Length: 447
Image (cartoon, rainbow, N blue to C red; front, top):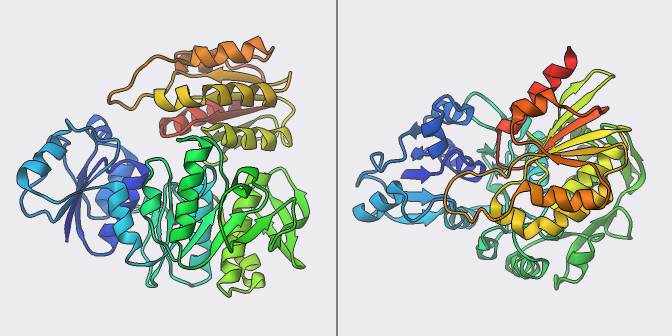
């Protein structure tokens, strides 16, 4: 099959495109970010996978295509979309195309408003190391899946198992009919808690096999999900972690007398691991076998990536971008460093507007007197958006509660004005250049 992908540089679309190429389809695609930056590393890796990258001007489409798949971020005026329709090519959105793929495999859908990328990536990694030969379509880039021709967000295996990150952002999650599902947590992110709860209930109803649910999540407790297998830290469940020891950069724990070591810090990552352990154990995998491979997982790109840890300073890059994720990150950092400078770039004017109160309360409750917050301008990826909110609107609310929060417009100015701290955390979604900012901060602190 010949498939064209518009918005192929995005984490979700690039994963499906790479997966399609790995399964033998002829794949091409475009992305406006690639037009701006031909040396983009994702473009280079996709081209190494045999994917043809063309300008996003309509010229890369012709009548020989079987299907054209479009990111939900692509506007109706996009020239590729207009050309596809003019040529009569079958047009699908990324979520619609993913739903088609889900139906072809024994799919494990990983849902939740936080931790989907890590949980789905960890599950695919464990299944891979356990020689289950899984397929994987994720949103985050698994470090150990990265190659010259794979950004790390997909895997093509020999089995009919497929692990996917099931995102609720566009509502398409209700169209998935997986074999098994994990529902990790429920909080405000792309939608209200009530709206997302309805989607998760529908996903559970659509699941033919196991539904794995976090028993500690208060919002999930109110959902109508029957017959779920539960995991927890605090409450009694089918898979409860006990004898937990949180170390600065790893966590050890027990389930039914089996000792596990997770090479990632924090309660949130322990929850991610418990979801995977519960599912695999229910599928018949020995917990001793899971424990043997779990420590080998080195994580997801831009999830607690350590750029510097020299005994004097710690610099971390993280994808945390909603109040729940940020709160989990702050709790983890409080166990590691006495003073932390958080450098946060809100993503998108719409999401920032919706989560404004949550952002403000999260930083008010999480920042200690020794901590500081630097807000960067809201990330804008293009398209139509009402720019009626700014990072200063967040800073004002946080400062009114007596916390240390400033807005710095220019990254070079930030590098020259870094507040004194033991640790620096760069956080925010969608903008891969934040990793470069973390690297620059680390370089400055080395000298």
